[in-house]
Length: 395
Image (tube, rainbow, N blue to C red; front, side, top):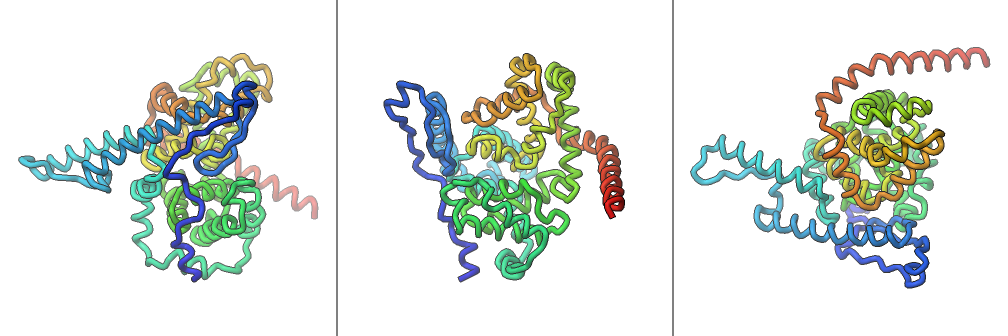
């Protein structure tokens, strides 16, 4: 019985039939703030204009779904993983052409969004999670959860502390069943990788993975591939060294891609990590509406961690003129928070991220990381020494 519940389909799933939101006549007339649930069960507050935007987004999701289903009908269910041989072409030439054509088509489709009903399958295949899972015995996750049940570590204590604070009020996550599933995923991974263990922020990431993937076990493997292959090393270790490096790299990119904003924020003595640290650690899951976050993740799982930089830069770029008029740090934070919380339309954000920011490769980011790593490690070492010194003085 214990093993089968990890294979079950989770009780909360995104709707195959996407409903139209219909605010009351009184709300429409007064343009009042209304509450409604998005596709993944999160309660959203907004005005009637926000509702209209969400309805437009839902219509585009339907249209995009028809495109994906058409591709599946014409090329086969797993066309994005297949390479076919065209008649009259050599094997080598055909594979190259087919792979290139599929890659171009797939990249364009993914940037326009994977339909919710296909997300679990496409993510699991393209991210490398399926391949990672195939390298271990089929009972790996079930055996792991049984083996660690009842064990208490600093990681499990922090997880238990964070469970009720993870998307409170959600109709499935904020239930005993949702808490139990999220706990198994997080505790299981904390034992799989003791260097990471558990870091605050992972609870939001794992929770959203649980809502998207069809099984708890698949959510676990998506978390594994994310931390082990997609994101930078050491991002979630005890000293968060990888996260500190990412923040320095992001600051460099902001100065290069958005020099006016960077200069103005520096004049205000505003540290971008005040907002960007949460963006990077939670992968925007606490900042952006769920469907916008998942559109970012669609691209993240296919194109890699550079997507996080593109999106973070786009948020600043979209509000450039407003930010340049600010005089206080608090005003900057308010603008950015209001912007992210109301970005209900992913197609308002992603074209800026990929078409207006300028391009940089994974290699470029890797070089910047290597450049910043020594300074970060030195700073962390100094901090560690200061803390030890204070502890000795207290004794």
